[in-house]
Length: 225
Image 1 (cartoon, helix red, strand yellow):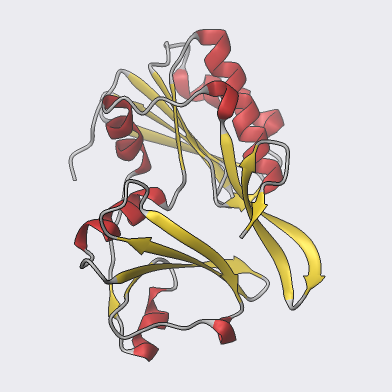
Image 2 (tube, helix red, strand yellow; image 1 turned 60 degrees about the horizontal axis):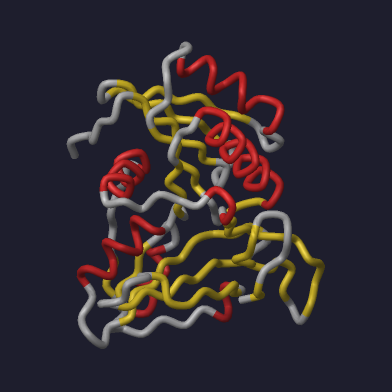
């Protein structure tokens, strides 16, 4: 896939472990990994990657992932954008996959994205065709509670689970910098005062669940899924 270029784009992705920062300059990507407590290293890593050049676009991956790194990344990107007057595009790491999955679904077909959460839990994201927002419904499940229909189209790191149910599998590979640049060109610039994180928070064992998924404002717990 051909890369999409802007003079200098910086992607901050603390949804993964370890977190990472990607700099794209003239179609070439450079990457640096950062730890689980990234706030102290984000600035120095960006300075190393930019080499003093002006940043044209900041991209922020908002989750799903651990709360502290996501909050740190959002706070850093917000401050950097305000101080340098740089536009920000924010999105979830699953958005590119959900978009591609939704584009191939039948009118009544369900798409499922299955991702590991740790502690023997699965993040199940439902995707429907023809929606402005491709991600429809999110659940956190134990493997024993997973239910897949034969007509479902299954994607994600755990898509092989779909074989046990006779479902069709869907695989797509994405470059997150390309996705960010495409969104920017379509005018999808984020409001710095309303950056949101999609995070996983340990909440103790409750009715068999030991994690809680929340989609809420930075620094506070949002609605429980």
